[in-house]
Image (cartoon, rainbow over all chains, first blue to last red; front, side, top):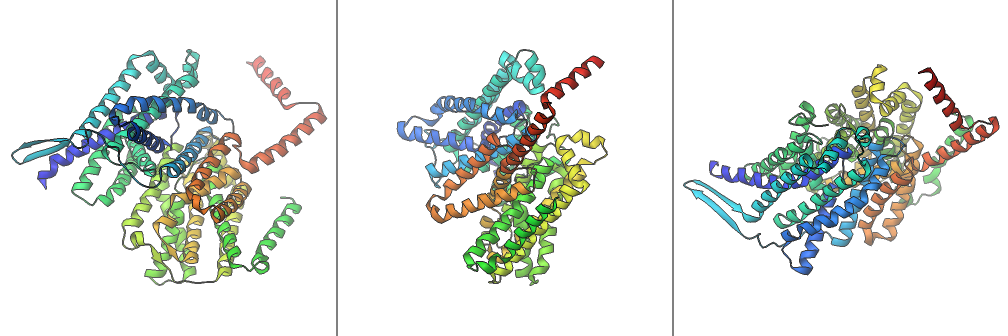
Length: 295
Length: 335
């Protein structure tokens, strides 16, 4: 049992890396717009399929396609955000609730479109890094590190650092943080709330779509995968504290560890139940996340 | 309620009651029975969404819990059907309390996420537990009597409608909910305990859904996680309520009838394009939120009310905007 421990921890951390990329854009978008986007899993799915088809037609290494996919989906998100803004600034009823229901409708629609065009089959995106792995062995201590997952972890950390730089060191980041704190005051300081929100939403959709490709290289993709990743995304942001960006990596690693431990030591069909149990207990004890910094 | 409206309602009820006698075709009876079920699910979903302002993305879980409660009690314990219905409702109610207590203290977003997670957790549980038969589902003793289920479903839905109408439109409870929806801190300042009232409302919406699930299980005689715990149940109840009009009881009924009629035709003539139905469902939710946020019924009654107000304004020579401006000016002078 103990022999597998290093491998279990490593697997958990590597899976956690993938989850960072799923949740970090989502957390950013929530922090600024205060809208839960139920369509997050569907953006991941759509990004994954764009990656799949681009790779299928051009045979370019999928990881090299990531910037292109980011640009395409950032543009889609940027163009799409005004619709959400319109719902959010509506006078009828509770705009936040309406926006939530709106994204839920979108999620159903995207899922239906995905099933219509891509079918029910699951497939994977072939990457040159998929096959490789290196192992570390010393006496009874051994680990196998799949190259593609390691690359995924590096990529996730890279994205996190990039976002950190963007938010803390640039004028744009200052505007975003001001907007997250107080929309009206930020507007009075000359920040264009609409435009900035559109950029943030674009960044979020772009990051989510890129992580779809990563998931396609590491696991597999199908038109129904969306809701699964939406759950993980929710789990991570609630654990991290909604809108608290720097809690996301830790919560992602925790989710990854839970998953790998259930896979190796316990019954994997109870993984989701364990995830829900943790979510429930955290909501009960510390509703603002593990660090108490959620909004 | 004016007596003419009560008369119309009674006529409608009488018409519905004799429906299976006039059209005894079992297929038709079956369709109308299912329409009643969807009406019940849509109005109970609206208790949380429309009246309280909290979106429940796991309404289908209560329906499924009720269905499984009835199935397990009948098959594994040999209970008579009608005795299982109260248990099915209670089961769903207890689940609502357990799910509601931690999440209803928080903002709406947490509740939305938690209910969705609960629905998925219940789905998972039903798949891995032995007592539920796992993915194979459960087979109930058949009782082939369409009329019985027609009247039972009608009874449950009509009873739910009357109960909700009384509690939400006639009793202080509805006002409390609306106060929480409009301004939670304000409601608290008025002496309302928001969490308690919200949990009560959540339970109120869950119990009828559980009973409907119990009736459905015995009616269809076969249940499995893919049928009674499917996401599509919540999605459909939601689109019915949103399309018909949130925050009213009549709106979701109209929405349920229209959407269900559409669904029936769609599946009858276009069954090859089943996934397209999802696209339409999601599209209807998104489009009605953008273009008719009050839903069909809310938009129609709002339009009628607007016409009336306009007429009155023309008669007295005052427009609503004008009087509002005067008030504002007065306030400025005082300050």
